[in-house]
Image (tube, rainbow, N blue to C red; front, side):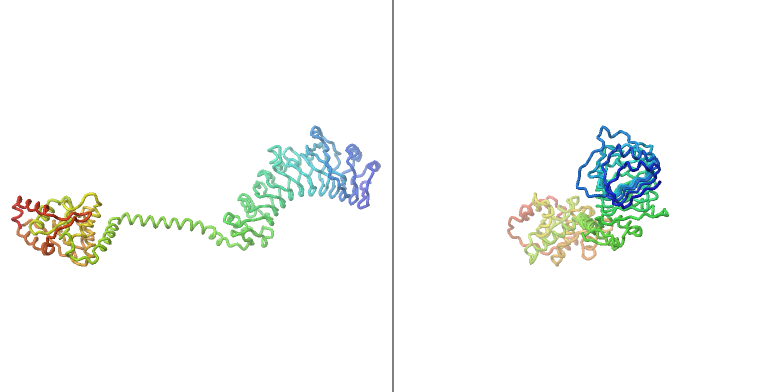
Length: 573
């Protein structure tokens, strides 16, 4: 007899000695019964070795109620390295959905099997037999391992191919257990499948994994299916560069918010360059469709035909609402993300630009602005002011290089000969105040403003400043208060010195020209006196202002003494 079956025969117990009479049996099927037997290692090994032709054992679906949670350690640490012999002829062992014991058995320190065996298939699916499983060695011909839903604690090095174990494995299903990838003793644990070149399918779903080593699947060139769904992965950053035949990646029901760029690149390249496309399942993850996920959303939409349940896949939008990913308008999302950045950058930049421009204009026009400010002050002071309320008949503005002619000729003649009250800097300006305030006060207290125009005058910023104020006074007073004297002929003044303000005054006003010819000087003085009008009556002056001092008898006496000493100048008038 080669095949012996008691399938679904309500068998509760069986005497192992019964098989001594079946020396040629090749396959035993005791599935779908209620067998429960305690492991007697010696008797079991003796039985298996006696059945020299036996290749397949089926004990699936043998389950009896057991309330025991006792965990038995089969081999203590000192005996864990011993090599266990198993019959060379056995190729398949099927124990799925079986209990076979009242407790659980652990191999925490590992299990070393003799490499001289033929086992290709081990099926322990949903078998509540093992508590803890350490590293297993010796299954060099094993191609299919079904250890899912055992409820066992599996260490990472349990299934590692690092030291030659599982080197022929093609299909590895160990979902529904407990696997802590951080619980390892060797760095080699991270390279669990580095020497598993035939691995095609792996199922590590529902194993409570929170992390995965980056190099876990390095060199797994034949890998086609990966199931990692139902774990606690917050990041999925693993090396799949060598998985050129990958067809399915199930990472549903984790804690992923997106896919890293290297995974996007690898899958995108595979879908583009390979005849086999990669199907990706991301359902049940708290995907984020925010400003940091724009590239991920674009990649998902581009590869949507390879995303499982794409039309139903949801994510959390940037405003905390839940939307379907395929409905997201990337352009609108980008605008929403960049809008605060644009505003945050544009508004301060705009203010800085405006402020910079204003600062530049203020600096460039600082004299003009000061002039306008002083004009405003002058306008307020002159509101309703009559001509006879001025302290001086005229204020003379000249450059310091033209001081000799301005004082010894013009000032001396107007004061000593024609008895005008004239304001000039040397005699009437009080020390200690700002020059701009003094000039403004002098112009305000003078009925006329005389400008001695020379090249020196036009090259001086202060003189130009005084000319601008005088022009403002002309506008504020609404009458003729400005007298221009060209000390030099207009044709000798360089054109670059003739400012728009001066040109405007020359074009709109009659100006006086000084001449060195004596016969023309009398006409000059007559016209100047006509422009100044009658001198103010001699009234006892008070102390003047805080900026200027009034003309007194000492000033007039000094001028008369000067003229007597310079009789040739007096004769000219």
